[in-house]
Image (cartoon, rainbow, N blue to C red; front, side, top):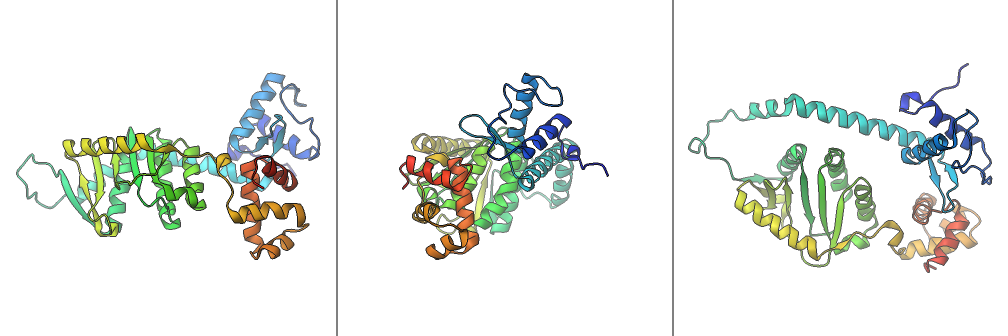
Length: 333
C-alpha cells in the first residue's frame, strides 16, 4: 500500500521529504539544523536551506534560538496546511467574484424603488438602523475596499461574537493587500482574548495601535465612505453612512490625529503575564502532572493546558521546564 502524500495540501516532494525526516529524528537530536547539511534525497545545501525556510513559512516546523529546526506536531501541521489551502481558495474566489461583477448585479436588484431625490443627486448621508443592517453595510464596504480601511474601537474590547463576525471580513481585506489601520482603546491591553485576536490580525499585516485617549467610533474605507454611530452611547441603534467628500475628509483627519497620539501594539513577547499565568508558570516547577497543577490552582485541566500552550508559544519554549526557565530570565517570576 502506497504512503499517503501531502501533495493534495500544496506540499512539494522535497518539502514533504524534509518534514518526514524531521519527524523521524530524535526529539533530543540537535543535528537537524538544515542549513549546512545535504538532504538524503540529494538536494544541495542551498536547496535544503530554502526548503527548511519554506517549512517554517508553511507552519510545519519551527526554529529555536540557535537555529535548530524542529517539526510541528503532525495534526497541527496538517491543520496549518488546510488553513493555507482554504486561504488561497478564498482569495481566488474573492478575485473571481470581484472581476465578475456579480455583487454589483445583485445590488442592482435592490435599487428598483423610484428615486425621491432630483436626478443626479447622490445619497451622501444615509441612516442605517439596527446592528444587522449595519453589519451588512460594513461587509459591503470592506468587500469593495481597494486601498485602505480605518477602524476605531473606543471600548478596547472585542467580544467573541464580534471577533467571529469580523475575522472573515478582516482577513479578506488583508489578503487583498488593503492597508488596514485599527485604533483600540487602552482596555485592550488587559483583555487576553482581544490581544490574541489583534496579534492574529497583526500577523497578517494589519497596523494596530493602542490609544490612552478617548476615541470616536468610526469605520472609513478608501477615504470615500465612512460609518459613524447614530448614538455614541447606544451603538446598536444604527449608524450613519457618509459619502460626502468634505465630511469624510474631516473624519480621516480626526482618525490621523488619534493615530499619531497612540502607541504601537505590544508584541506577544513584550506582554507581561497575568496573575493566573504567573501561578501556572510557578506550577511548572512543582507540579509533575497537569491534573495536579490544575487542581492546585483551582482550574480545569483543559484551561490549565490552554494557558501552558499559550505561554510556551510566547516564550518560544520547546518544553515546559524550559518555559519556566525563560520566564524567570525575563523577570516574570
